[in-house]
Image (cartoon, rainbow, N blue to C red; front, side, top):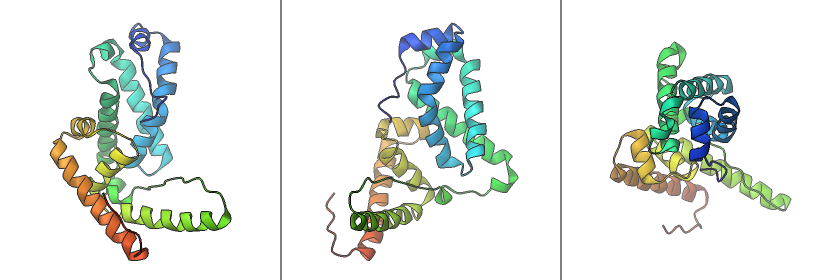
Length: 191
């Protein structure tokens, strides 16, 4: 979760009161996280933008209930997930899309050219390993590692148990390590 992703009760009160400037501040705070999470489900930026528009429309429509929501961040993830699934069902060409086809990109800052080449190669191996994970396993792994969500938050968003999340993370890490070790057998991994 972004450290800048701080939605205060005061801001929610202003949004609830219909303050358009406050809603714009809310939008500016939440947009990067909402976009990134939506992009896990949808490959095309224009599809993401369509869903994001719908998500913020829903937020505006339900502005009078925002203060009653226990965890606004988790609620936003749930709205994004639901709208993305709904959108995918609506688009016939994406009827069989899988989370396995989602792009996974990590950025690593490097110093020398040699380090850059090695890290780019390792990053490519890692991204390929993540791409090979089963659908549910990949989503959970990305939510934990990329979105920095806690197991409890993910359990609420995906309507599954924390135990299932732990099992899926163990599977993901084991499979990633197996693939990485094929390319780099000298790497020792201890969890």
